[in-house]
Length: 70
Image 1 (spheres, one colour):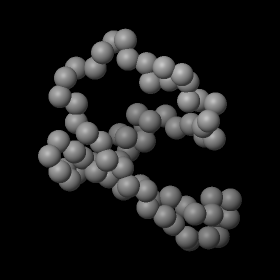
Image 2 (tube, helix red, strand yellow):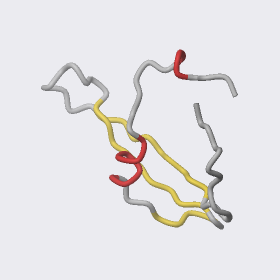
Image 3 (cartoon, rainbow, N blue to C red):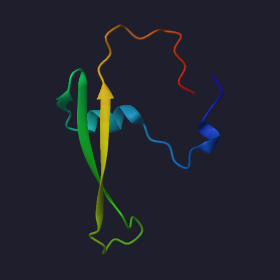
Image 4 (tube, rainbow, N blue to C red):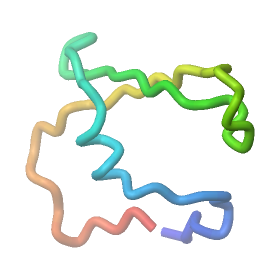
C-alpha cells in the first residue's frame, strides 16, 4: 500500500487522541465521540471553537500482525 504520509500536514498520535475521547455507542457495533478544537489556534484570545465528530467501528476479529496502515 502506498504511503499517505507525504499528504499529511500534521500527524497525531492517534492512540492518545482515541484514549482521550469519551466514546459512546451510537449504532450497531459503532462508537461515536466529539472533539472540540479552537478555530483560531494562533489567537489565544479567541473563544471560537468547532466540534469534530468521530466514529469507530468495533473490530470483530483480532488485528493482523502484518497490517500496515502507512
